[in-house]
Image (tube, rainbow, N blue to C red; front, top):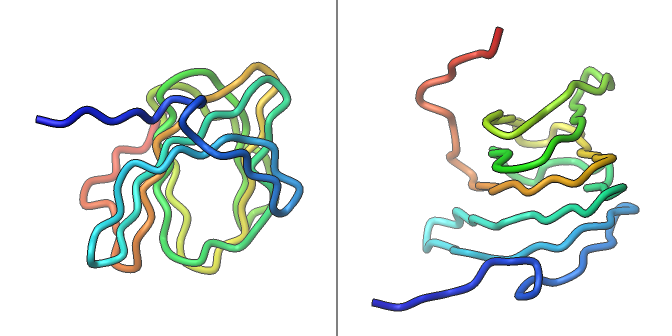
Length: 117
C-alpha cells in the first residue's frame, strides 16, 4: 500500500488563461487519461479555454458557476458533474470556493448521464 497527497498544499498554482487555482495531479494512465484535483479558493477561476480532450468535472465541495459553448453561467455545487466535449470553450468561477476532481482523456464519454432536475 502507498499513500499520496492531493490537497492544495501538494499542488501547483495555475495562472494560464487568467486562471487562479491550484491543481494537484492524481493519476495519468498510458492511454492519456489524467485525473486531477482542482482547488479554487474564494474568488477562484479556471479561465476560459478550449478543452484539449473531453473533460469531466466532479464537484466534491463548495459551489461555483460553469459555462460552456452556450456562453451562459450555470450554478454547480457539490454532487454535480459537468462534461465538456473536446474543443469546447469553458470556464469555472466561484465566489465561495470549490474543490473538484477533473478527469480528462481522449476517449472519455460518460456512460450514464443522470441530468439534474
